Amino acid sequence: MIARTSPTSARIDQWMWSVRLTSSRPDAAAACRAGRVRINGNLAKPSSAVVVGDRIEARLGDRERIVEVTRLIVKRVGAAVAVDCYTDFSPPPPERNAQPAFAQRDPGAGRPTKRDRRRIDRLRGR
Image (cartoon, rainbow, N blue to C red):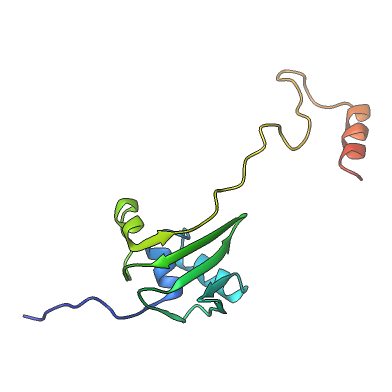
């Protein structure tokens, strides 16, 4: 019988996907290639290795994530298990605007008239 040991290192793109920081491994790799992921302050390539104790800073979407690796995994796990694999030092997420980005028409008002379309274009800066 072969005894399985825990890995001593893991690829950053695989680890970020496994602990659910990104929704897919290609997304994690793209973030690394775009220069939005750092390991201990150094830019990370998708194949960069992470070990327990590494500090990962990643700009994912409109949010800055800062985590410290506490456990290495290479397969995707449930959210309850994933949060045990890192310590989160991220700032709170940005507040969402309660007001819509642009004016919305009342339901049942029909299509905008030509005059309405001109006003919308002016509002959008066209």
